[in-house]
Length: 177
Image: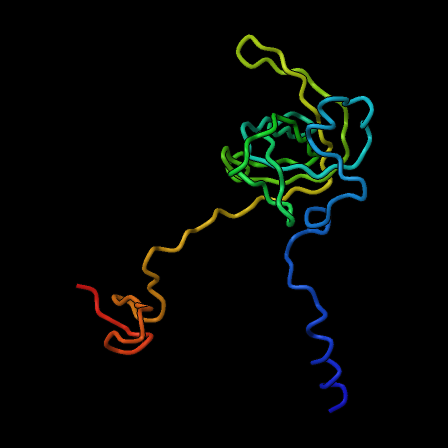
């Protein structure tokens, strides 16, 4: 009985997060994308955690390179696409990343070490992009917005949370017409 009670008391202490710690927790010195892109040589070798939307996937012989459009991150490390983008960066991974899984328009967060910069031609404009040597990558699932009328427990019906004087009191369940 004492063992069962101690297990029940320890159960809430276990974490419910499925995010890798490198993604969920920023580095001790959190270097933002604008800081690093302004002076890449100063921050080379520093740990970073950046995220955004995948633009391109290039599989080379020894590594895979992702081109990512950078967005600011929320407190969990997920890119905030409602805010303006900050620029582009490369993510180098020693593992093979399948382009079918790491597809364009997927949200991703990468944690690793800033490993210099690389030139990219966009049209006729040369850009210097920071390169992250990734230790951890996390693809984010797509948001699924709820419908306006939530069809919870009663398929074909919607809940109406109306004024208390409507028929059925505060909460009524009415059929769709």
